Image 1 (tube, one colour):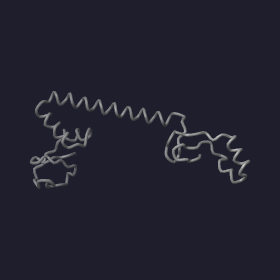
Image 2: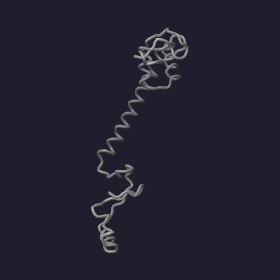
Image 3: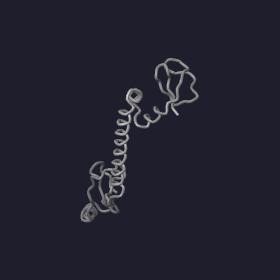
Image 4: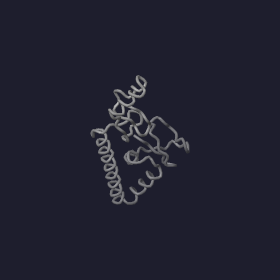
Length: 138
C-alpha cells in the first residue's frame, strides 16, 4: 500500500520509510485512492490533480475515473487482439528481426545456384524464406 507525505504530498511505496525523502517530515497518510490512481498512471502531477478533483467534486472524479478505466480496457483489448492476430495467423516471421516482409526462395533458384556454383551454391537447400529486412534465410 502506498503512503504519502501530509506536508509535501510526496508518495512512496516503502512502508518502512520513516521520513519523507523530500521534506524529511514523518507525517504520513495511507491513501488507497493514490494506489488506485497509480495503477492507471505513473504521472505524479496527474495523480495529485485527480486526488484534488476527488476532494472537490466527487461526481466529476468518478466520471473521469470511469473514462480512464474504459480507455485502459480498450487499450488492453486492442493489444490482446493485435497479439493474437500475429501469433495465431499463419504468417511466417523472420527468426532474427521478427519481420513479416519475406520472399520465398524458389526451387528453380536453388537448382540454378547449385548448377552454377556446385557445392558452394548449396547453402539455400533446406531454406524456404529470405527476410527482405535483414537478409536472413530460414
